[in-house]
Length: 393
Image 1 (cartoon, one colour):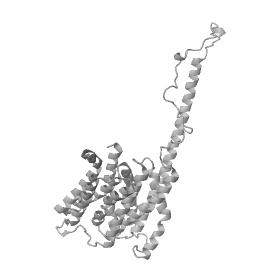
Image 2 (cartoon, helix red, strand yellow):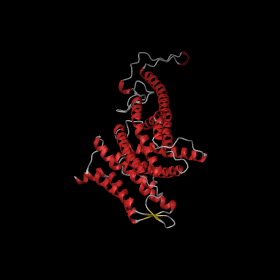
Image 3 (cartoon, one colour):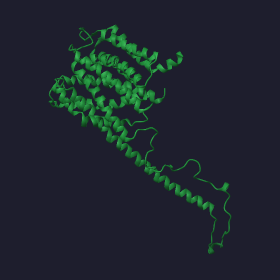
């Protein structure tokens, strides 16, 4: 494993913790402001803030390169002048100091001349040193913008379906069904030629999905000893389950496409620009989707949050749960693999279990804990699937 792969794993685990916490906060917000579209639209649109950051970064790099270019040009001029003086005959005619003069001096042999410019060049030989050299195969700004235009609807739909499921079911129910994304990612990756299916990968997905099923059958106990299922709120809805499954499908599609066009380690795409364009296109082009959703009764009539505290919570949650976590998650995808990132979503089950045990004093049955352990085991197997396949050959 290279440092990028290990970094991608750490980012994936960190994002899982942020997402679970963000989902808990979002469901609390829905108690006072049940508008999944508005929250999704605001959170995804915040990604547009990456565009000025990315362009300022490019300007700063170009400025620093230009400054270094000017400095090295001056150094080169001094070195060349010194080299010319060494190769020229020395003439000194001073009548007041002995009338010393050397004429017709033969030039120094080539092997006696110190060439200060030999070896590594002090100045880049690019035609325009001020511009950053473009990596081979890297997408241009227009290509990144076009890619972002295609990916924006997929990412927005994924985020909206997750929030719409949270508005109708519990965090546990949404997490369980969203964890099936590993299966969809494996299938979509094979269909699009991004990833291959082998026995080890299938086993890892089966173990993870079985663990999800066991947590569904498991029971939980509240702090007061009352027994309940995994759906704490009791308002489990078929529509919410459907939204959660659809979000798992679109999530799998997005991760595979992101990896396919970003390169082996994301070297072809500037992630800040890509997600900046995704946020910009969502902000400008997808606001009208709320109108048909209101017309068919899926979304309530739009209103602003009445409480200033709720507004602050929505903004902070959007900044952390979307602006920061989505970018870190994308780096985790391109530095590891779509399957590993999708299996990482399954880690929300044991993470949510630990949070409930520590924060709410929730207790879990043995079946639930075994299922959570299986989810984590599936994640580990997916990470070392290639190594295991090599050993089995």
